[in-house]
Image 1 (tube, helix red, strand yellow):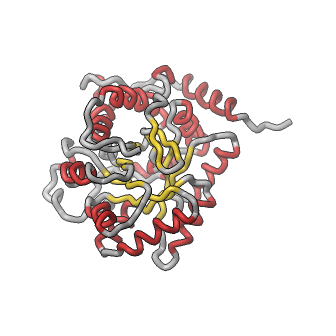
Image 2 (cartoon, rainbow, N blue to C red):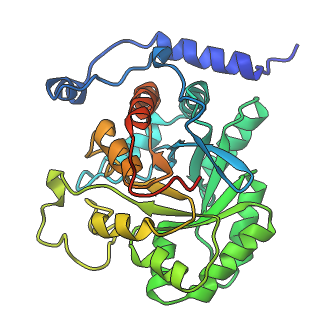
Image 3 (cartoon, rainbow, N blue to C red):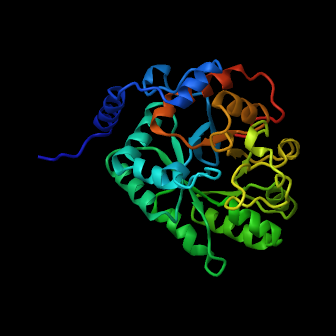
Length: 328
């Protein structure tokens, strides 16, 4: 007799496990309550992301809230806490990753992002799909300039619906004025019949692409305000953001980003919208969507998904004016 679960059974089992988890409130949740915000909950009672909160990039329909992959892969932006990445890797067992994606689907989040070079994450995604999971995969790729095609092949083999140049590479290539190389990787992604994007932490990256005639299907650009304490450092105004040496801010010039992107016709996935956990979702989501982002990529633990979806539904429903028309 086959022990393989149907998709319905898989989702039902995952939700049942989550619903029976002990309701222990963390110190962080107590602080959120003190600030007037509800703590995160694993209960699915908030309802799924409203279906109207989707956008289309090429032929792909994407939920406005996207599940980021850094937490699952153990890539932690943890300021000066050196234990966080190992903690993430221990927490995100195979079962927990499967549960996280199942919860995303159950709550209307239909797309996740992960690094195509992370073989563990990719293998888990393949298993998830074989078990009946349907969440879409947008692949971050970090191509070797000597063999651009190989990274696109990785994304294809992982059953991704799209791929984009990872932000650190996008920034580095833009600084090097390697516009032709950026255009080439975008073209290779499109040749593979995937939607193609370029990511960057620096405003220079989309500027170089727009000025150089690069034609991605979408951009992935950081956006958050700077109203959190760990931005207040003497080195905060250095020109080049180094995610590894200075791990406390990711959008150095948010006002300039908002102004520039208002004139860009391509769909925009905003990321780092919560400044790696320093900004509450109700503030970060509002800032991103009100200021022009078409989608928000957010790293989410399983126990945060229902609450983040509730907040996203409320924020999106309450936005009457934007600095930029919806582009997706």
